[in-house]
Structures are given as structure tokens and as C-alpha cells.
Length: 256
Image 1 (cartoon, rainbow, N blue to C red):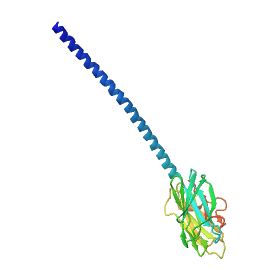
Image 2 (cartoon, rainbow, N blue to C red; image 1 turned 180 degrees about the vertical axis):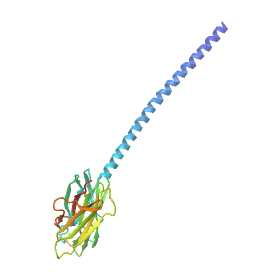
Image 3 (cartoon, rainbow, N blue to C red; image 1 turned 135 degrees about the horizontal axis):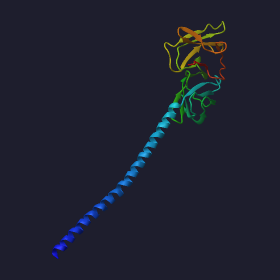
């Protein structure tokens, strides 16, 4: 009887060990599985946040805004602001600085569109002024043309210019700008020093906004310069200042 009791006791101890091991494994899995699910959910949230940040960064990089500012009238204390969206997404402007003075606002400019408005209550400290724009995505765009000046109660813009914008995949270009009036002996010529693989943008500052200027654009094919402006082979530019900005744009298709 003593030996039988001993064997039964060992058997019970073996069963208890197995049962304890099973219970331990069950407890271990019941702890690991929720922990794994929580970690996986955290990884998913982190991945989503990364994608959202990457998308926000891409949108921010896609913003493109040209900013122009010029006096509404030299002495009426008003400033014309022109915002031209040259990007592929809409841009929301939330603040504008004229020098160090902020103007809070909310203005949305759609792609390929222009928003123009007037600012008042301007600072009146004599000197040079620069206009900057802040977008809702955090981009800051500075004034595209030259700065403004305020002297003796009068606003002025120092330069008038013609910006030639050639949409280009590949090419070498020559641009000529001259004045049509005999009283305006203005002529400038410029060419790319090598083959460009991006859009070509060149600004020509002119002597006066009162004249008419003629723009011609040539593209090099082999050793021959060929005029690529359709129609008459030139584009005439006149300034409508102060209604329009002191910088006029000429767009030319450079082809392939």
C-alpha cells in the first residue's frame, strides 16, 4: 500500500507540473497577444503619421507663388498686392508682411489664377520695403520684383521689367528685347550658355514703362538659330502701370 501511494503521489505531481505549464503558457500568450496587437496598432498609427507628413511635405513643395507689390498711387497710402499661383495646387495665404508689419488674412489662390487686392494702413518710415507672404502650409514667398521705397510721403517702385518664361524640356535659347520708339534706344540680348533641361526664365529691366518693347525668342537647332514665336515671330509688350504690376510676363512654348 505504501508503494502504491507513492506512485500515485508522483503521478499527481507530474500532472500538476503539466497543468502548471499549460496555465503558464496560457497566461504568457494572453499577455503577448494583446501586447503584439497594441504594438502593431502603434506601428500602423506611426506609418499613417509618416504618410500624412510626407503628403504634407509634398504639398508644401508643390506650392509656387509669385508676389508683386506696387503703389496704388504714389501718395494715397495704398499698396496693390498681386498673387499669381504658378503651381499645381491651391495656395491659402494667411499673412502678409510689409517690411515688419503683419496683415492677417485668409485668401485662396487656385492654380494658374491671380488674386489682386489693396492694402491700407501702411507703415510710413522712410526707406526700402519688402513684401513677404506666409501660406497655411508654412511657405514664405518674397516679393518677386524689386523692393518698394517710401520717401517724403511718396511710394515708388525702382524698376520695370519684362520676364520671358520659356517652357522647356531640352534646348538652347536666345532672347532679344528692344524698344520700338526711336526715342528709346534700348536693346538687350541674352542666351543660355548650354543646353537647358528645365524651364528658362529671364528678366530684362527696361528704362521706362512708357514705351512698347518687342520680344523675340530663338531656339538652336544644330548650328541654326530659329525663331520659335508663332505668328509674326515676336511679342510686343506694353505696361499698364499702376493698374498692373511693374513686371510684365511673356510666355513662350519651347517645344521638345
